Image (cartoon, rainbow, N blue to C red; front, side, top):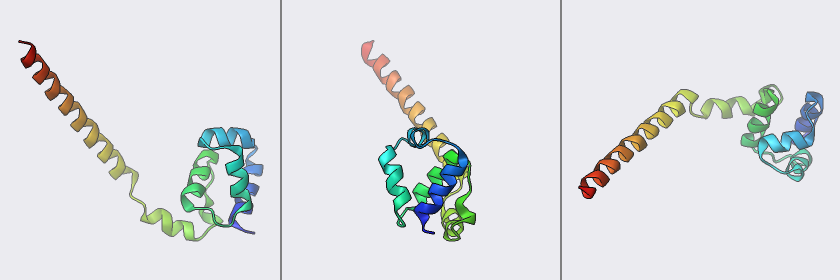
Length: 104
């Protein structure tokens, strides 16, 4: 069974319709059908589908465990988001101060 067939089986077992899954992924139904027919599905796409379906594909694709481990942790990503969010806020505040000083 190739990657696309495994994904198709999991989607059918999940009970979610192709239309609903495509909408949640922000993809077209045709994109999903292409995934079902392909053996060359990226691990990113597999992980994305798995998140929507709440299914862990690592038991079906042994290579996926290595791929997931090599990705940065969510904690680092959250810290990065907070850093840039704070930097943006600081810049906005500085910009507002400059605007106020120009108006005077």
